[in-house]
Length: 159
Figure 1 (cartoon, rainbow, N blue to C red):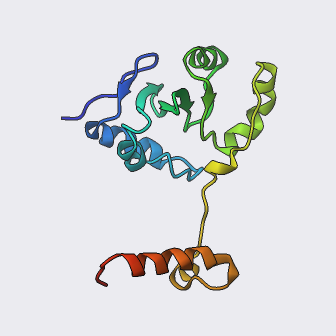
Figure 2: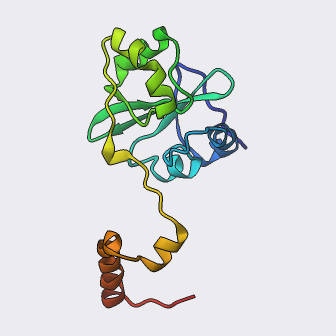
């Protein structure tokens, strides 16, 4: 039986029963941020103590903790000022705010006393299938070494 996602300001821990409700909302996002999939939220639910809340009909607020610091993720963009300020009462920062939301809202955030910083450690990296299959050139030297280490250190079978 599906577990309903509570409306903000209430939160509930991410559970498998929420999949049918969370997946369609996150699937409609254009940003393509890999953290905003149900699979990612579910797999890392304990690591980051993910909790979720509904903001309106088709928006989610994701609350979590990393290194003891509480953060919030807003896959559908920023809420109105009052809700944003409430979220910052309990969270230190916004994580994974898509560029499509951050750029137009940067002035608003700065007027509220916040700054927008690119987090290069959390950028998604895209590779072509051909490059990953063949690992050509100097660019993929480290990845080729990892493959060699795996082959030399583990028993495996090709499917």
